[in-house]
Structures are given as C-alpha cells and as structure tokens.
Image 1 (cartoon, rainbow, N blue to C red):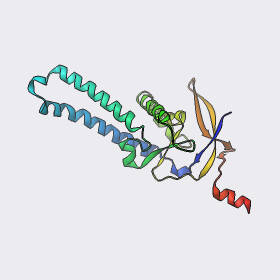
Image 2: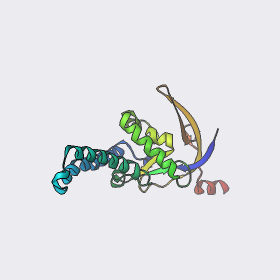
Image 3: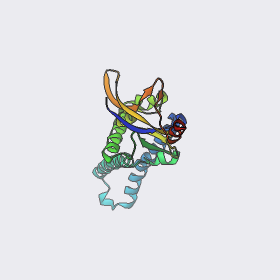
Image 4: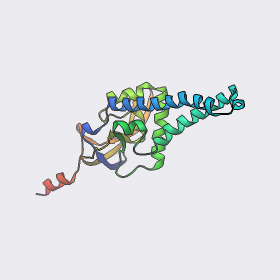
Length: 193
C-alpha cells in the first residue's frame, strides 16, 4: 500500500455543497453571458458582408472553444474559476506541497467531463466526509475555504473504491478508527513533555 504525507483540515474548512453550487452558478452565468453578448457584438461590429449564417456557425464554434478554455484554463490555477474566487474557495492538494500542472489538468478535465455527464458527481459532495466530488477524490484534491489552514499533517493512503460497477483509485487520509492520524507541531510538543 502506497503512503505519503498530506495536510489535514478541520471539518468546517471544507467547502460545502452550497458554496460549490454557487460557484458553478456564477461560472454558468459568465459563460451564458459570453453566448448572449458575442452574437450581438458580432452583428453590431462586423462589416455587413461578413454577417452571414456561416459566420454565426463559426462564431458558435469559437464560443465553444472559449468556454472550454475558460473552464479548463481557470481550473489550472490553484485559485480556480471566477466563481470559486467570488465565493471564497480554492483547491488544496491532498499531498504536502504544490500540485504539479498535470494533476491540475487531470482534475480540470475530470471536472468538466463528470459535471456535464453525471450530476451524481456534484451531488456526492453532500454525502462525502471531506466534501469532495468524484473528480476531487480521483485527482487528489480538496476544495477548502480560501483562508483555510491545515490543522496538521497525516498519512495519505491509496484506496480503491468500487461504485456502480466502476472502480476508482483515490488518495485519502489514513484512518485510525474513524479519525485520520494527525501530527502537528503542537501535538509533538505535548508528547515530549
């Protein structure tokens, strides 16, 4: 079994269902704004001979690519999308240190795919101990409040979850009973005395 060290957060540090839903709604409004404004701007600004049915088709392809760039590109930052920034939440890697770009990209692609096709991905936040959606669990991230600080570090272990005939490999804090093993400077100090 593979083990590593990672930050442990208090239960109230995780971003819950309502905050994360609000972030999705804000991002949805931004993307819908692109779709509503772009054709009007194109019609008003483009020369008359350029405004054709074919140009509108190309405009829609461009908008689709811009939406994907927004959703994927903003998720490549640790602060997340504009919705995440407005509601005051951010990503936190389950391991100590900063995540590498490929892990952020993996999470972004999973989030995009699972959010579009499986509402269960988002609803899972309601039932998860650390308020993780499936794309968070599989990619190794938590979503926490912006100013959340870890309460210590603990062992993070790889675990296999089987759900609806699908198998997922996830990283989670190691459990001793129901509580993760937490080591912090304060705990070590009290043990020495």
